[in-house]
Length: 119
Image (tube, rainbow, N blue to C red; front, side, top):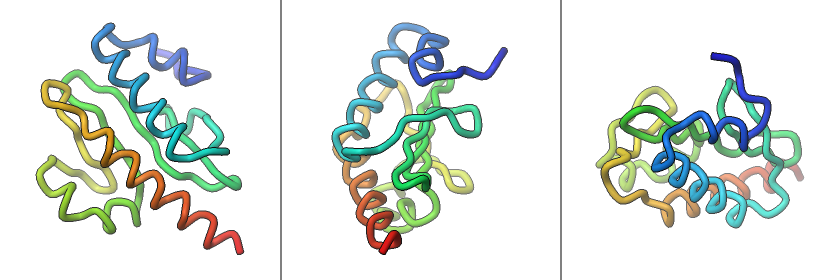
């Protein structure tokens, strides 16, 4: 499998139900990170601001991986504790309601952090 060159291409590589979730996550992040730049990084969809990474997300067979490392996970540790986690990642099961509001809040947190660190 080749690495997607755009988020659109990446999303098209998944079954329709997963595509819909990925599209909603992308839209959620775009709203939460005005001015965020879309890209593919580490072979997954990512958003950057001021040249620095904000968040990444990725589709898998049974879950959506979300990466807001390291501070996004630390700041929302309690809310993320109900989900399976790996080093710097959290797994949102596809067969459960997606926590779009939480994704938005984590993304906004990362945007604010990015803007503070820019100064």
